[in-house]
Image (cartoon, one colour):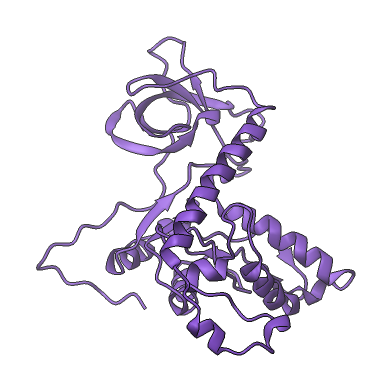
Length: 303
């Protein structure tokens, strides 16, 4: 999962959200962090290759729909390294699991920096080590153990003989199965607690249904447009497929075979007006179309 902060920190630094690469077989959540802006595809590639390959090459990368992730360069890199690239629903950051890591990171930074806010970059390595060696309630194990198959040596264990680590059987497969079981139990528990104050989704959409979509347009003084007067919803759009229990892929009625994007159910509403109404501000598909490579085609070097 790759995501950048929208918030700038002192001393001309930009705090970058932890880039967490997760192997589908291991619920590790081992974070990697950078202390620079990552708003361009080449910087994302450089970070992914230099930082994440040091521990493991991800099989899957989950990110938002930013231009640095949907660009042709990023798609070509994922194709060459055989990395499956997944995007969260548009304008629904709750679907990005890295948000939890960002929450934990900001809390610990706020405690350590105190009144010296420009010293956050000096505290980052200590926080990273603490997060990787702490047991998480969602898995019952530390991120370092699920990633490397053994625990990292902390300050209070430096006096122990390293041979104890070599002689001790880790039984990684056993702990991975236990971690998955604990994770499923914690997910059910958190879902039950979260659903107590939430209403069940009133609408279940099916392929072919016509819906309104919530708009997110920006004001444009040159064109004389303001967000206050632009319709809050636009439609009709057609449900193409259901991607998850709460997200749907929509398409434009003018081109029903071309998906526009994936939207959360909270951004959709049943369309009940005259079918002759046309789209006010048609949605555009983000990014470039994915490139297809044949056996005889040549690939260019992207780094």
